[in-house]
Image 1 (spheres, rainbow, N blue to C red):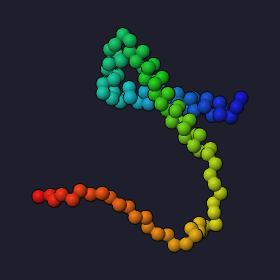
Image 2: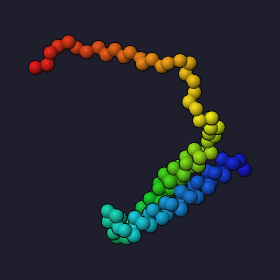
Image 3: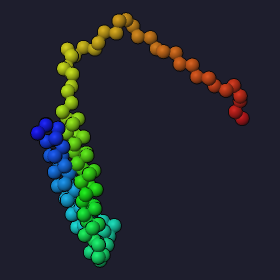
Image 4: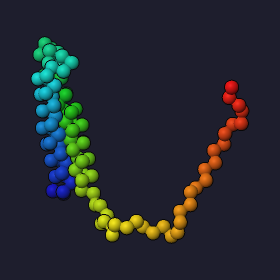
Length: 104
């Protein structure tokens, strides 16, 4: 199995775990009376499943992005000196056209 597929599957599993913890915390703390709405509805289980699935998509995507960016190659460090610019730097002149009318 390719390395990136394994990283993606691991990210999805971490996303599922984080999503379950997040939804459990939402229901335990009764944020915005979600627990009351879910327990007093006949299709409350569907709401819980939807929250877990959609939060899994978000958390897995973030986890995968973090994993991919952590694997990026960084250039080797230089000797610690700044790169030579070939001479003295000169500031650029920026001309901004302004209207000549007076403000009263």
